[in-house]
Amino acid sequence: MKRSISILILFLFALLIGAEKPALISGQGTVPDYQFQAIWGLPLEQDGLLRPTSITQGDNGDIYLVDEGRNQIMV
Image (tube, rainbow, N blue to C red; front, side, top):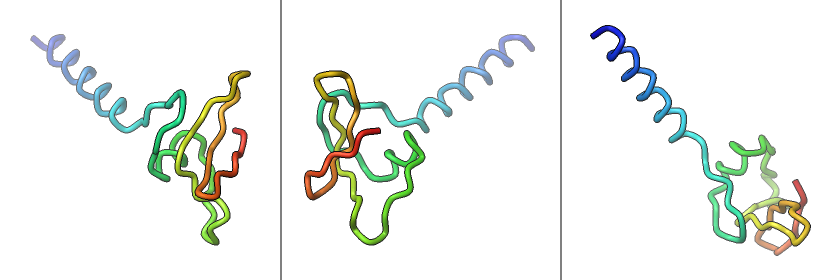
């Protein structure tokens, strides 16, 4: 009984941790700004220079943030 409760607690904790992490998107799609911070720890610019709106992957496998001005920043 004690072991099954421990396993249940570990399982619920794993679900909680998994829910906090955003999925890395391959291809292009809209992702909220806070997810970029969570994935890469990037400081988002307050003056509007970097407002990432999507993430895309280049042909060679490099990952880019794409901002509102369609500028790509490799990460």
